[in-house]
Image 1 (tube, protein in one colour):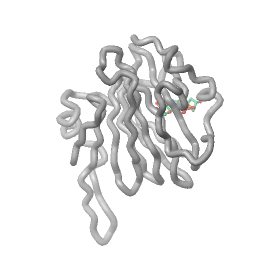
Image 2: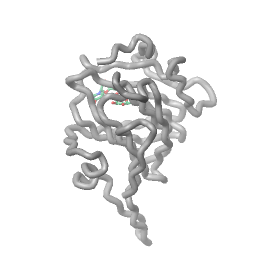
Image 3: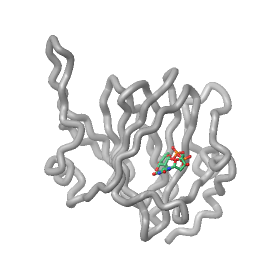
Length: 181
Ligand SMILES: Cc1cn([C@H]2C[C@H](O)[C@@H](COP(=O)(O)OP(=O)(O)O[C@H]3O[C@@H](C)C(=O)[C@@H](O)[C@H]3O)O2)c(=O)[nH]c1=O
């Protein structure tokens, strides 16, 4: 697999080696040993999630507070999304910066987003099915949301018009209100 660093230390783009033949394709979507080597540490995942979204649906920007902060290994198995991670680590040189990556069933790219980041994505295809592994369990009490359109973060979403977002995400807070922990 090919591993590419991003400008946010710790956030990685992972491209698995895909074996295609007349039947279709095969690839290892997760290999603990190879993943640990890429991440530089042993990482335990405890939950797998799967969501489906329609075109122009935007989910995010989500994170969970410590001690329930989650690392996420995300990918797309149908369709295409623009996936974003925002650095919330208070001592980070890139605090408040974001990276975006197009993930699709076609390119099979994965994004590794360690704990300490907010995460969100915009669906670019008619529908998209999004799969991700998390390093801690879902905990609604620790769950937080920062507005996807926060002016300080200024994320360049590839949007043609206003996205469809959940009521919960409509009441996301501003990045200015974020209290680094
Ligand atoms: C995230 C999650 C939700 N749920 C439930 C709660 C709710 O009734 C329903 C839908 O939840 P949400 O609206 O929060 O789903 P969604 O907006 O897709 O939330 C996800 O967004 C992306 C961007 C992330 O990064 C994820 O960590 C997660 O926060 O599913 C679980 O049972 N377990 C989970 O792990």
